[in-house]
Image 1 (cartoon, rainbow, N blue to C red):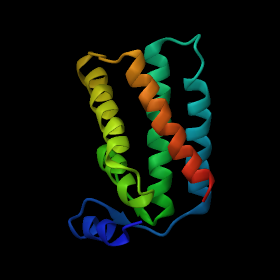
Image 2 (image 1 turned 30 degrees about the vertical axis):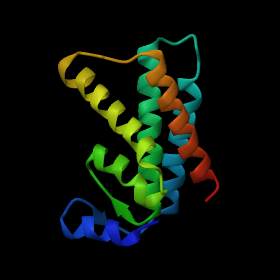
Image 3 (image 1 turned 45 degrees about the vertical axis):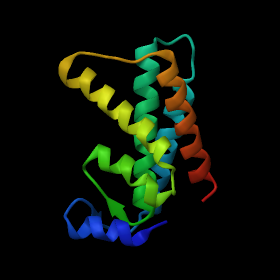
Image 4 (image 1 turned 90 degrees about the vertical axis):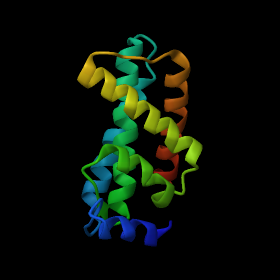
Length: 136
């Protein structure tokens, strides 16, 4: 983890330093894992599966940030911080950033631009987050 990069984000006001809370971490991890499982049910619509997978990825990314002793109210920054909290490769957190953009289009403009491949990519990255966090 590149802790100094996270501290720099505190200095700019983008993150808040806050002691890790094991109970909060476990709750976020549990929430992410449950949503990840549900997102894999093929009987659900593509939109529902995407929503569940996106929210699972956010809960897991936030769990990693909280375990590292930081908090953010900015969803995009939570995903970007994965490069520092879990050393997630840029290509993987960029999938999450793309999904964040697509989710915002759906939430704020009513346009949901997703396809099966994006969901597959999102699920793959989210499973990787879950694996990394469970190993901690």
